[in-house]
Length: 77
Image (cartoon, rainbow, N blue to C red; front, top):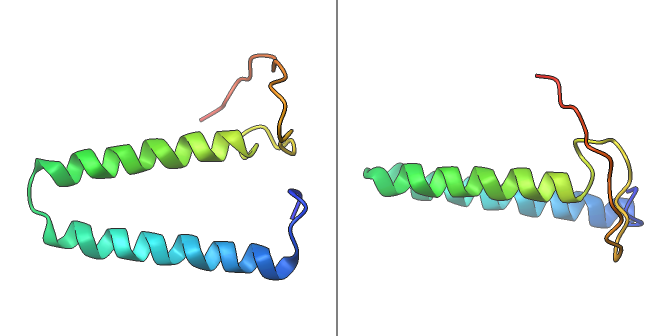
């Protein structure tokens, strides 16, 4: 909701993401080759990049439409 979306739209986006992951899970259950591992790795990479772009790792709201330089961040694991 920090992106300016309504509660309804936020919930619908979460439902869409859940449906997407459900479809991926069903698809991966039928694929029994190294292609499945590659697909899973690419999907994970896309999720991490998307989460970084919306500010999930920094806790800061995203600055849409700007390419501001960010200081290096330290991620603790």
